Length: 364
View (cartoon, rainbow, N blue to C red):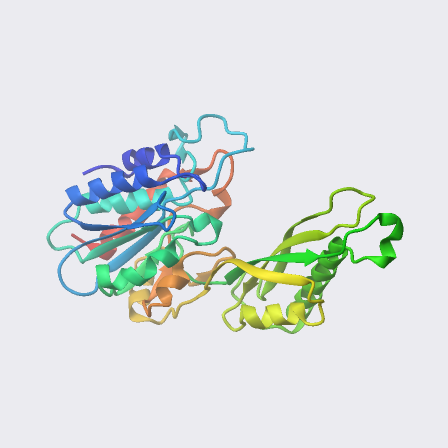
């Protein structure tokens, strides 16, 4: 058996920042799981530089599928007290990139894998890549989940919730709008179309629709922001002050409740905008709306210190598993307020709470 802390130290030591390969980590996890008696399948990415992993141990139907992502956000521009990729203990916390989001959960899962006994329920793991840039890896894996792992009784996506039961979150779609103006000298500006002005028109449309959603859109009272939201995060264009901008881009997103469709919201945004603005989808993921009364979810809730269902503001891969018709929740150690931060850390007691839950849930 290997402890959660030892495994987390190894996992943090792999720099799997977005944009880098995760292959060494995947191979290390594969070898650990094979040694523990798991059947393991690797799922290569379309680019060939990354991979996911599907693994299962246990005969018979059902069991529990535990889901994690291998990538972490970059550390560039952050002020760390020490090497982000060397796990260190500070008081009762473990500090390192990914310790909370979400290699801490993965460490608990792998530690559980090494101590499974003959009476344990079937246990499966789905480990993805590129979750941090819009869940771009899991769509390349999801169709293989049931053929490779069977149909589990429950899926737990182990994003940090402080071991609380999350049953819902918004879906998201990210877009890039390209605005095409006409070139010319700024002294003759009224005779030309300004691409940046077109971008500003789009942003005003986003704000108009956001105001409408806030006042009369669908509501989800348990959500931290109980209505769908729009957000323009980046705008660029133009060459010089005395030149009319010929092109401009606006990157924006829609985060939507399950009662509303991104296509409908986008159509409301673009209504009346000129054809010189074209929009492409950059990434998207579905929301989650699990039923707390589902028997498998209710049984999990009975094992938690705080069984009250909640929703979170951030997105996860959970909606992809729910789309397969699998009861799916989000529940994992740590707090998202610690994720993505310099000196990211997780409390040791959180890892122990997670491991205790896995023991109670899977047995063995």
